[in-house]
Image (cartoon, rainbow over all chains, first blue to last red; front, side):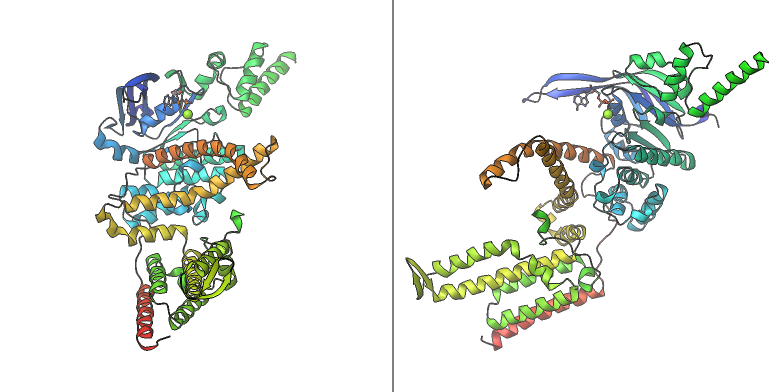
Length: 297
Length: 268
Ligand SMILES: Nc1ncnc2c1ncn2[C@@H]1O[C@H](COP(=O)(O)OP(=O)(O)O)[C@@H](O)[C@H]1O
Ligand SMILES: [Mg+2]
């Protein structure tokens, strides 16, 4: 199925958002425009990555998708529902789950399984079905053996997987992860990314991954790059990373291999743009070496 | 120091007492405490002793462990007893300087000592055998009727369970901040009480900042998962009375009846 045939799960048009600051009398005395006309269209089953420097508005955008914030201007439809309508809020939060950065501050219960059940409890799901969902969700993230543990005893990566399970148990169509790996060690990061990719591929859950680790976006179908409240680049990871200079201008790093390939190219090595993995680079270099040998003989 | 406190902690186990419905245990503790203050004869205390010892035996929590929990409040108890000994008016038995120890005072002090000890033991059996979660569940469901008096029972229970979840996290954090400040020359160990309390003040600022940030994050996470208060919520682990719980209610009623009978027929 081509992605353009699929149904849109998130449709945002010309979104703006202003943080307002009120004085003591409740009048607006300051405002900050954190989103300046963002448009996006995410199809069901896609894996979208959002990159951007600190303060570029990624979290502000993420919070719109879960109706934690509603747009000041423009329109946003999540699963066909207008986020500005109060009556849609429950359904939107069920359709688009959210995982946050700090693993400690989003686990509510003191037992893993009870935390996974928190969302379904809020939705009014019958007891028997809650257990069913919790079992499935914890198994999907590989945390079923830890169901009776206290979250305090888990590693950062495990806590994030519990948080993901808490969202999965609500049977969402889409998961928005706002820098879920920012506070984890490399092992924990790999754990979380593997879990998210798995959910995307096997269950067809739409994933919107916000991150500033470049290595994590190479699996995405599409990458959006944000700067100062606007989407400044978008395309496949390869397309986005072919533009090393533009990324650096908005203070973003590129994956190490991409950077290496770019520097080699500057020195005259004939490499293509947007190399993303070590394997690709070695392959290209092999090709060049073979070419040289052929010419020499 | 906080780590040595056994009072209020959970002692993992799988005894009959552990498995009872938390509402049964809450009511049982309440009944027991009320009985201590209503029935105060030697025979009543004897019966209470038998009851406590039986429950402790069934719960398989070592008695030694329970008694250890009494230590931190020993001083408080001593003060209460001394106060009662000397401040109760009545016939003097002993006079030290201007303080008179009275016969009534002695009797009263003994009563207080017995009651306080049993009150602590009774409530620690509750906390030793009930996980904090099931305790808050029990409170929420057992006090559900107070909703009608506009007491936000669900919200209070939710606050309690969140507090229980975050206490260890904040303790850890305190520890970290302390070590970070010690590394930069802060001194929490030496000096008098006043000095040490003063040294704690710079600790509180980062701790409060962090606690508020956590509270903010948590509120957002709860909202994102569809939390909208207690209305329309279902329970993953609803409380259901089983046969053993009904039997426990009967035992409780038996205890109260026995106390009443003792008061009527045995006059000591
Ligand atoms: N609650 C708030 N009130 C006012 N300004 C805010 C608030 N939250 C974020 N901002 C501002 O909005 C901008 C975007 O923030 P955010 O969406 O958190 O960025 P990111 O997640 O990409 O780091 C930043 O300049 C930030 O200072
Ligand atoms: Mg952010």
